[in-house]
Image (cartoon, rainbow, N blue to C red; front, side, top):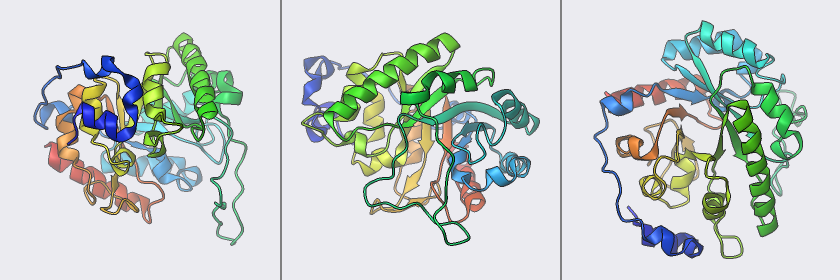
Length: 310
């Protein structure tokens, strides 16, 4: 476990200054159990990319049977929310006893990473995807599209942070989006990967977000990616108490190369849930990017979480 001074030193966050170092009192952790279990277990539907579009009803039925009750949606090849409007999708989820809580969007136009190629489909050819709306170009359209669905949070899934100028532009985009979300009665969250913790021109993007974004913007902490970055999530909870209302409950192997079902890797979920109140956790969303067997992974994950939180 790292303390605040080590966190700042190890991640290049010296630009935070004395204000951060002066924080000396933290809430104490409560045992994992009733408080943590009172938060129903949800999932990020990206886990089912390529599956849910083919059979929305069948997919939601299986998820409900596994015990998931909270949903966070993501990009759909069918457009909209798996081919439905916001009110339709919310009603569809409700018909299976589930609540639609959040939706993921891109912060800027989609670009493949350098050297990356589109995955191939069953025909052996690179897949094609419909245009993906993003906050930089389509912010108001996105906010309007989710209105009426009853969700609480719009989540920026990723945004350019490779250069100082990109970070500054992304901060501007997120701040504008927050104002639009606020008018629509939505909260805005930012979801991390591991790159946010790597210094750019001597400053860590995640640190800049906490100091330059509107304080009304909160964060969705991806537990696997922050672990891969070499940081202790509990230390982040204590640095920024109450700022992490949603988590991506995701596991990773000891070499930080392969994502795994929850409970099969190195992330200490029992300890993290014991500190859920400090984080301000409302919705834990299980996620497993591109699993070999999505339903098997989701079954393993929820069984493990129910066990440690019982």
